[in-house]
Image (cartoon, rainbow, N blue to C red; front, side):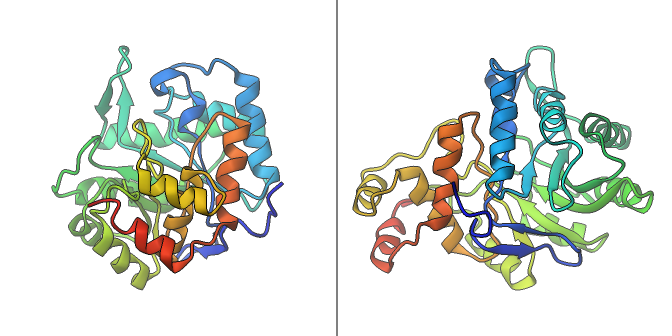
Length: 289
């Protein structure tokens, strides 16, 4: 099993008493097909969470609109009462239609209701970090000040400890940070999608965590002959190489690869031990081009 003290090193969230191993776990795949409804194997989902925790994972990413409600309820079943070092990061700003569609839910009442749903289904009195999910599928460079103010008010009430952002631009980050402290940004980023390169570097200088969602490509997994060649040369899997590249890309990057498989969980965690030599990194730099 992976050494619990060696999951990519540690990262301390700015302005908080929270620190986590840089390799965490994303809970989205614990729900049913298309992130809707219950999983085919609830006991298997519980087993994945418990093994992740035993292996040293102390950062879990979730949302109450996964399922909806499903992943948070599974997390509670598997891990509650939670260990003191576990940081659970959730997100608000969306809801699911009866047809499994993804719909915006960004009014003040919807944001407050979503926070209450997360509190209830996770079984906690306050949420460690809540990310405001802005754009659902694409970035929308619009003002988010009013939505951030809602979360800032919930923070004052003690229902939220810290605030982050998801699927946002650098301009929106600056706008939000003028309202309240922002401890993390969660955007799409991986070997193939490098649009946030400059943003990551900016956040690294400011000590703000950057958490790439779809680090392995999401619903269309990363594939390339270059990636496969590098993986073969290092006796690793292509997905382990893709995760290791992210860890080496910047010190503020935190990983949340998700899976409902114990085998894949173990493979993902082993990526923390993989060090890419300069020649491999140089080869991978051309991936997104």
